[in-house]
Length: 451
Ligand code: ADP
Image 1 (cartoon, rainbow, N blue to C red):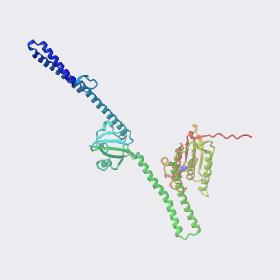
Image 2: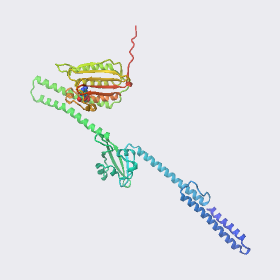
Image 3: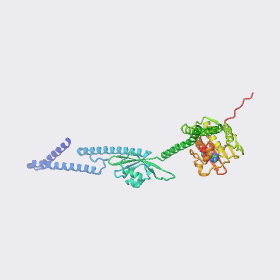
Image 4: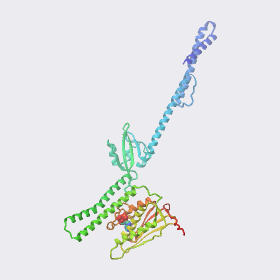
């Protein structure tokens, strides 16, 4: 400021001196005054032009190249440049923060839609696009309610109670492939709403399975319990002779055993689901498993065969050298379920073959083949569901629980094996578990030292 005043006065003085020098002698004072005035005008014009340059520079908005470096205008330009730079930096930082925030919303496993006060879409993430079939080019600023025409959502969005969520079908929903979404609105800001969506298909299916499971277990237990209670009441109220008493007690024992088998299968299943995967360091000899299965199978077949008439023909191919990595209890449970199914469903006189095969690629297969009634193709995909039975009465009559193949499937999965079912109605069935080469080994024969 001082410099500016000084330069103004200096120019005036110089103008005055020059005016006095060029004026005639008697008009020197006037000449000096005129010189000062002209110099002052020049200074103001020059200053005005500098101010104009600065204004034009500011109007252009490009603050990279400062037009003036010195003087008051130079300082104004420098300060303006710094202010603009600081603002730009602030904007860049907020933009980065916004981008980070949007990236976080984008990464959310939930669908996120931002709606304005009119219910129009302001922004949505990729998950929401998948859930509702939204397109960023087409659907931004569209009314969400016009795009998602579900009565349950419409009623929910029209209300004011957003404490609960609403469940509705998602994009691509069909009765055979249901897609269910849970949608929750959260009001915020000035009438805006944050919409969160979650795919609850698996959750709803699990819940339905749990309900079915509880209903099935209750039903399976209620039947023998009702029979048992009936027999107890009969024993309590009727004077029965010894033979009748013994017969009733026999029937009661059968029902109690049925409940016991059911509970034991349920426990096996829950253990299979809850326990860690079997380690691959524990080895079980396949031959010893087959020997045990043969003993049990022949005993079961003898019990189930009618006293008169042909018995079943059982063949056990015991030539197995391999060991399997896994839990022998689980492997035995799965294999014996397959053997007992074959025996229970194959009529008297039928053939059953149990064995072990080595494939060329190193995999090995435990198989059980029978000449029983076979299974129609439409039942095969559902056989491993809990309590799914094709032949209800045969299953119950022979002590089946409907859980056997569910156990087999679990054990197979836990040992990296594949459960294969081939069956032709009227001809028979072949159930097999194919174990990967990584879970098998052929132990070296123990060398007996010569004396
Ligand atoms: P269950 O205890 O009823 O035998 P599983 O889960 O072991 O239950 O088997 C499911 C259903 O599959 C059985 O109810 C039966 O209808 C059918 N099934 C299983 N094995 C055989 C087989 N070897 N031959 C014919 N049907 C079979």
